[in-house]
Image (tube, one colour):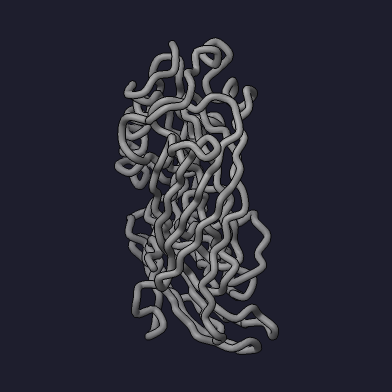
Length: 343
């Protein structure tokens, strides 16, 4: 099949059985779980927003408590640990796994009790200590306390034709911990490069971005692609969710409409973020024959037409979890009962 605008994306067709699997996991995960289903909430005024927010200088020591509630009839053990946060590939705060080395709030947070046994519909309170190291970077920091039932990881599967989905489901409860270290607030974003690629049949520009300030920022942006000084071939917009200080990503902007053929392109990236800050960078972006073959396959690559005005919606950004499911063997960890952190 030759690449063409307007056809239904393959990943969209495949997400239907995936949605069924996720719904099945949400409906049956608690019933099949061997352990408890845990809700994790903050205790005290610092948790008034539904998550912890502290203001503390370097060298400070903070004490806090979390409340654990077993919302199921199953008795079992629960592990407690702290993790760092980072920026997801399509922006937004995400929390790293237990296996990742901790350098920030996850390293500052100590839980003297790391395993709690909850009876049927049982409750417990667990204290923790947060020590901000001397010399800690001024500005906003983010991490989380996680409650993980000691129960088997359940595997859910679905198949559509030759495509199969396998999802490992582990129920976690995540409670955000934000630490503000006093300093002069700085909101600063940088754009530092552009490369072409993408999953099967979706030509994508990956725009390098970094938050080099010390505050969380949100915003929006546009990408305009032209061949030299010619009229713009593509113009697409995207949103920036929470972007954490000291983090960088390669933001995927999927090019809708007619694919771009191999060649050198002039790409203008414009961002508006934070308190009315603006940034525009002009980047060179090369699309190679190799990248076209990777995206569209050898049989279709020869049929890529010269660049022209795109049709269809003005922008489409693939959620990176979907990319991972399709491109990396369709395996993902689904976090149930997660307390989302909203800035």
